[in-house]
Amino acid sequence: GENVEQHPSTLSVQEGDSAVIKCTYSDSASNYFPWYKQELGKRPQLIIDIRSNVGEKKDQRIAVTLNKTAKHFSLHITETQPEDSAVYFCAASASPDSWGKLQFGAGTQVVVTP
Amino acid sequence: GAVVSQHPSWVICKSGTSVKIECRSLDFQATTMFWYRQFPKQSLMLMATSNEGSKATYEQGVEKDKFLINHASLTLSTLTVTSAHPEDSSFYICSAPRGQDSFVGGYTFGSGTRLTVV
Image 1 (cartoon, each protein chain N blue to C red):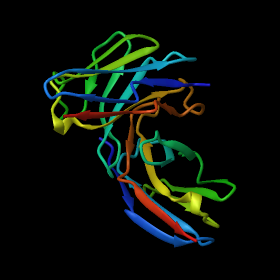
Image 2: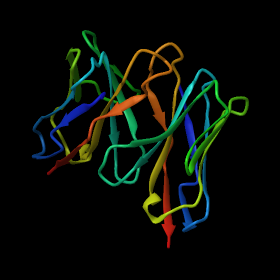
Image 3: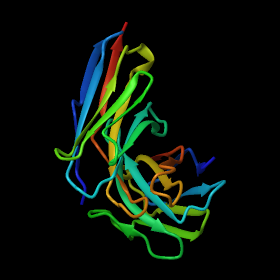
């Protein structure tokens, strides 16, 4: 089955700096790669996603890149703000024909200090 | 749109009792529901996949007799934790694909259930 690895486990950045989180996946059939932000005790919130036919996607301060050959994808947050502090999860879906199960990375605790 | 309502949001039960968690799709038909468990400071671990009208598929290491999943209709999937023990205390959350079109939709999550077994 799919195995998703995520690094780093914790990330401290100064407000205004950039944050980068990296994930690798194992199943070449994976074609959907979402990123979620989760606050304590809450459901994951989708912040951006990318599909395997696209190499990069950007939404304001957030961007995701995908390298299918290397089986890795990354989340980039620019101009970080204190409200960006949360746990971020990457995930991968390995069913090309329908929406299959999502496998999550281990998570990254991001702390943005003013 | 594509809302999944999950109840209860939290529950405290005594060791040995059973607890039922419901996930209901409000404005779409959820033929598939994924059930996750999340321990503190850990990731979401997939427990099982339920499909309407058929038996659930459990991930390796998940006891199917302990975690009973029923998906009796296109809008309701339930997870029953039977004979709960303190080690079952966790955050349980369901998720459903929003649509069949591979390039539209994504996944929608319930709000989660915090289970505490005392």
